View 1 (cartoon, rainbow, N blue to C red):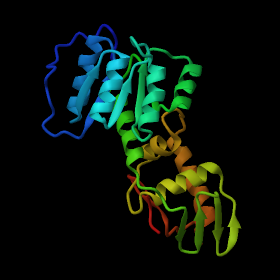
View 2 (view 1 turned 90 degrees about the vertical axis):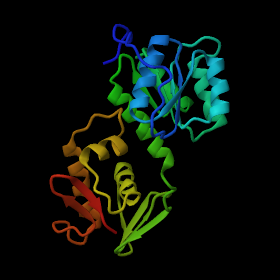
View 3 (view 1 turned 90 degrees about the horizontal axis):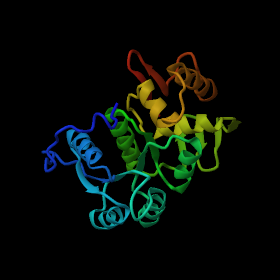
View 4 (view 1 turned 60 degrees about the horizontal axis):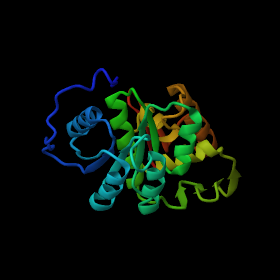
Amino acid sequence: MVNDTEVAVEIAIDAVPATNLGTILIVEDDPRMQKVLRRIFAEEHYAAVIASDGQAGLDLFRSERPLAVVLDLILPHISGRELCQTFKHLSSETPIVVLSAITEVADKVLLLELGADDYVTKPFSPRELTARVQAAIRRQRKPTAQTIYRFADCEIDFRKMTARRSGNPVILTAHEFKLLKYFTENVERVLTREVLLNEVWGYHCFPTTRTVDNQILKLRQKLESDPANPRHLLTIYAAGYKFVP
């Protein structure tokens, strides 16, 4: 975990990753934390630009067009809350991950309502921070899914949240629609239970891998012609699950 006693690590500020996956804007006023965050993202092959106050963050956001933003809340000149809202107004597709010592649930909910894509509390795990930023980037890069998706004798309308099999209505829960949608966006890809938990259930929920198994079992019972021998929602032993239309 990174905290104030651990951030006094010597880091080469001018280090640039050999392979640059994109630019991360870091808006943070603590110089020691700036160095830590720069190194964390350099190790993941991202370039980092640093803003020490809210106004500088806004200027860099406009000039750099970053891939994502890591945003502290307590900043000089312009607050993190105001910046979050402004960033989303300027570029709604740019992911924003708030990094703050504020732990109150009400503050987290407010930030998410203002447009933040995720919230990480200090002290933090570098691995968790980069995983959340990368997950937010992946979500923004996903192609727009088809409104109506058909496979075998099933027809799914994700916009209306309706499903039919052999022309007959099938009742799916909201979360079953969400899980099925993720499968249709990742056809033929083997998805681990951990990936499904992170991408479908989200980092703010804490279900177990058994939750994934139970939900897929229910989808099979509703959508497979022979749930005991599925043809579409396949188990890949020792790996996870795969959807085959």
